[in-house]
Length: 148
Image 1 (cartoon, rainbow, N blue to C red):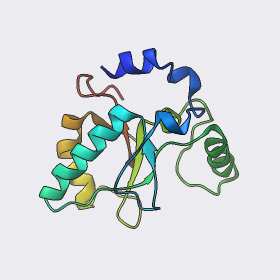
Image 2: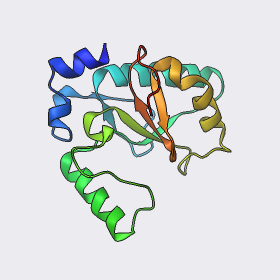
Image 3: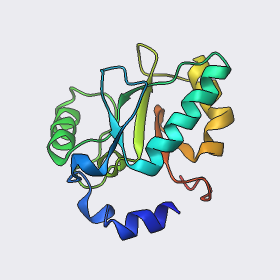
Image 4: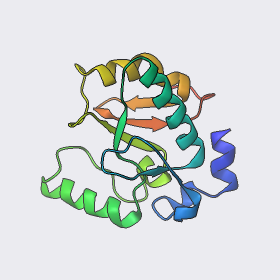
């Protein structure tokens, strides 16, 4: 389902250059606003609701990044101003509207209840972690196994 959506809408070739009308605003954003590709946004909302029933308030601090925003973050990473690994523009799932960085006032880590909830439940909603960033979760669709 996700692969077809991305192909039909030519998403991957326009990483970081999506129009705002192609994205969906999500709830639970720490900074006041954030958006994702529609299939990821729907899944985020379903996952947030499920987490809330378990007493977990999932908050996103970073979602879709434009090419320019990704470039600024990447340069900050290269200068050593940003501890997290940041990929060059055009290569991050943030630029496809398929990634969220989760927070609870700080980036979530292994000892946090948000992280534990996500590890136990996120895959059911199509969200998967990457190995070196406990706060970064990527949407791969609900019919795709965790491949990273």
